Length: 371
Image (cartoon, rainbow, N blue to C red; front, side, top):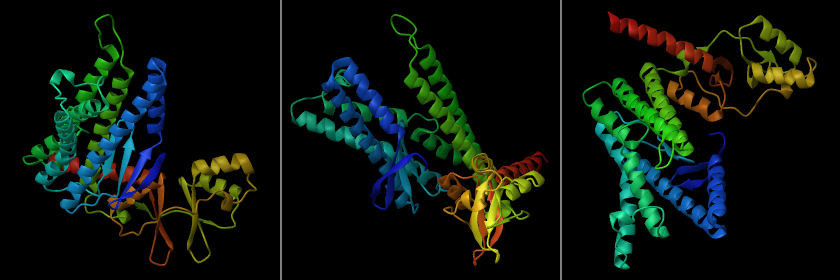
């Protein structure tokens, strides 16, 4: 994933952290320093780091539960507003999805319980009214885990409670419809959160809450993305890359100039341009935007060797559609070359063609449902 820093590998799972986390850390540290000096700034930074460790453990709870169900988790990424454990596939059995979804909140329950027991043994029994972010570090971490538990159990996407709701609905409805219902509930919740964040009323005056607005936006987009991803999975289930690859395209030789590439751009409908050796072996690829940028810098006399990319993944025509789409997202590109066993280019797996295929198959499915 772009803008994510690799921290290491734990139990076979790659752990990454998004660079925006450090922006959040700096913002909260500066806010603490401005409010009460360097001591408060260090306290806030330490608390945030511990909270994100709890979030990481929460995501490992999901990952280990998925492993129990025979599903691998390639990586976990920490964002400023939570973590994402990317499992290879969602379980077909709704009971397994409930098990995986509740494994994360169970970790927060365990952390909060251990801290409560430690505090009780030390003679500091914590009553409900003492919960919050104004006590000792242990009480603050316990309070945050309780808040994470409550927030994640809200029955709306993308929270774990939304996945539990989707699984319960899927016991009686088809998976796609269950996802749409849970996603719509999540978006309705996001709108309500945004309204409160924008027009939240304090005891004195209207006081907008920017953090709540950002969280609302994140929830709304995550719910929409989940619904879109499941719809795509339902449409493409069982398909391979060959079902959505472009087979009629033009390629450029490795000694072609940028001027020749520009002529191809003007006389074809292609937006992606492969570069091949004389024997048909793929050498590189570049997009329309990269071509235009290179023309500005080098003019038409430049060569395609200076603009093409060579560090890109390739797929086989029989590669599952979901795997090809995942590779495309991870590479941050809109095109993947499709090659045969000998490395010869046989097609282009493009985002544009994927969109067209999805529109066609969705229209056909709707027409069949209408009969």
